[in-house]
Length: 131
Figure (tube, rainbow, N blue to C red):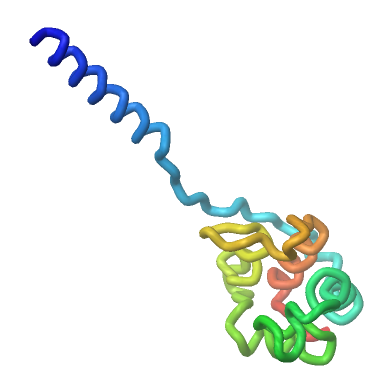
């Protein structure tokens, strides 16, 4: 009987430890502040990165996965599709994809692209202009 109670106690402690060790909490992304002196140009700095990472295949092209990130459609697709929140950029769906937060797959699929993240976040912090 003592062995039985001891086994139950060990099992209960083990299960408690395992459930504590599996605890996972959501994290808020750290805000990154971009130097506001440097204006980020959507057309000359961000579009070329989309062409390399996002729209070169059928992924984010017409007929592919939204948003359409081809040069002629990217801005309207991001803004009108609700992917950008220039009032609170770190909560933008677009930014959360780039960092892989909230269970989203990191975009681009090749892996986290710090240059793209910094430019996109800075562009949104500057008001997400079509420049």
